[in-house]
Image: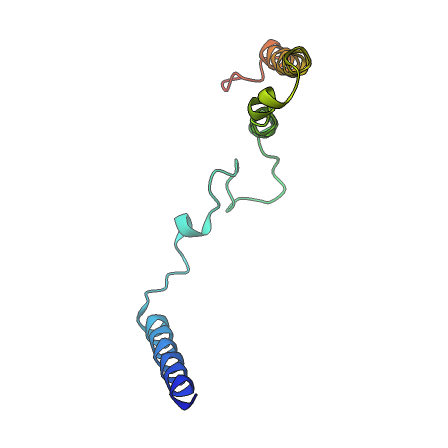
Length: 117
């Protein structure tokens, strides 16, 4: 028991020494603009906070999230094919795919998928 406590205290001391050395030796630059800016957020974080961001960027993000969730809902359809009646499975999956295609057609018709608008 004593050996275990001794070794754990040695490991604790060594790890704290390494953490202290990394804080002392690391180069800190608080003025680095690229590290402080968020990635692909749609606006410049160094500008005024009340400037509205691009509505088109927001719509593309929402469309991506909707289709991402729909793909997560399509994946369980494949294993459920073996467990259910083919007619019921075909009707429900066809209905789901038709709703997706109608939504995609609506977004395409409203020019939401064109980035240069």
